[in-house]
Image 1 (cartoon, one colour):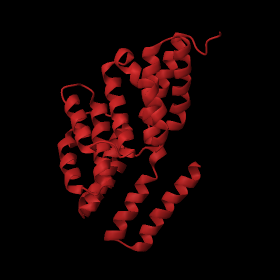
Image 2 (cartoon, one colour):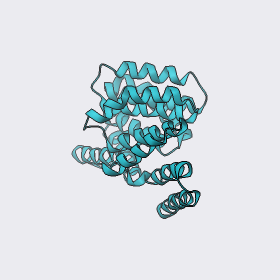
Image 3 (spheres, one colour):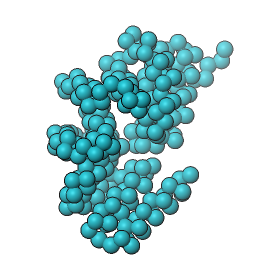
Amino acid sequence: MEKLFTRAQQQQQFELAQQAFERGDYDAAEPLFRLVIESSFQHNDLDTYVSAIVWLERILVNTSRIAELHQYIILVNPLIDRYGYEEIKERHELNKIIFNIYNRIGKPVEAYEKLLADLSTKNYTDLKCAVANNLMYYFVDTKKYDEGLRLHYQIRALYEKNTDVGQMARYMFWIYSFELFYLNKDYAECRAILMLLQQQDMIVESFHFMYPICQGLLESQIGSLEKAFSYFDMRQKSIVGKS
C-alpha cells in the first residue's frame, strides 16, 4: 500500500502541527495531527502514533469537545506505557483528568495536585503550566476564588521567569487570573492584567474573543454599562467573523 508520507515528511508534518498548536491555531493543527496519526499507523511507528493522538486529545479538550476524548483514551491506554515517552504520558494523564471531571469521576483537585507534584522535579515547564491553568479554570468554574488565587501566586513565577512558555498557555493563565481577581472584586488587578496582555502582545488571535469579554466585565463594574455592552458586542462580532 502506498504510504501517505515518508518518515521524514511525517516528522515535518508533526512539527508543523505542534507549532500550530502552540500558537493556538487549532484549525491548522488538527488536520495535520490526524494525517500524522494515519501515516504513523501505516509505518507501524507506534511512538509517533501514540504521541500524535495525545496531542489530538489536547485539541479536543481546548475546543470543548470532551465527549470525543473517550475513543482516543481507550485507544492509547494499552499503548502508552510501552510507546509513550515520559512527557507524553503526563500529557495523556492530564487529558484523562479533564475527561473524568467532565464525567464527574474522581476528585479533581487531588488529581491535578498529584500531577503537579509529579512534574515538580521535571523540566516540562509548558506542561506544568497546562496542568496549573486547568486547575485554575476548575477553581474559576466552581467559584473557589480563594484557592484559585493561592494557586495564581504559587505559579506566577513560571510565567514571569520563563520565556519558553507557549503563547497560548501564557494567555490563558492571565485570562483565568483575571476571572479570579474579578470574582474577588480586585478590579485594579483586573485592569493591570488587561494592560499586560496588550502591552506584551500575548493575545491569541483564535481566542481573542475572551479579551473583550474581560474588558466588558471590568467596564460594567468601574465604568459605564453602555461601554461594557459595546465590548460584549465586539466579542460577538469576533465570533461571527470566525464562523
